[in-house]
Length: 285
Image (cartoon, rainbow, N blue to C red):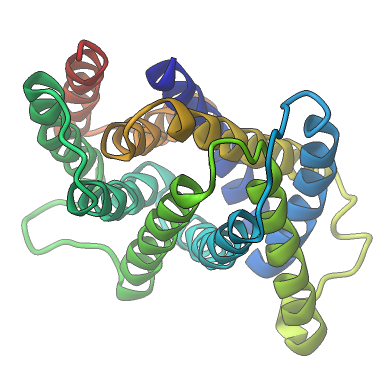
């Protein structure tokens, strides 16, 4: 069950990131995050009626709020990176740290996956690294611009901390830790938009063309993915759930290559194959 939920979260995360990346190419990333988080908060509040919470403690909400703060910064940096760089490159780089941070936390906490699952973790990390190769690079000296690389790495660290915080919340707390995290990020970005003039955008700009659909899709997808990941941590070890959840770039890359015609280099194709192999290894445990 944990593997299925984690993989579903990866697919939905990737779709949400694709929509958010497109929106951030036309609107300031902070404005996108605020609007999508507000949409996601509404969706999560409705979903709390479907997922039973037997016992919610203050610590569960605090962990959720802390995760929301870290994840909010992470998604802001991710959207900035997706807006400035190539989606099929930025998303996998982000996923490396998003996987490494919680895997390290899980191992330090005493989690010991089965040998075959443990072997699948480095395979997944290699797959993510291969997916991160810039298909437009013509030689070994070519690389990502510093702002894009720093945004991707910062986003990955934020997501990794977010995953750790969700795992620390109680198993009986339902979706309320995610709700607390979303409330935190909405408040945080409301303040950012109020204070930073460059983060503001007129209502007309957010309503043009397909922008409303992108914002709603991104907000609901991100909220649903967070909920799925939280439920996955309730059923399995963080070291495995985090790796499967961090395979979301496969979804982003698939959408980017199909809808925006970004091309994959041969190493990225190999990375997709290794990603599938790692899933088989991890879920076989």
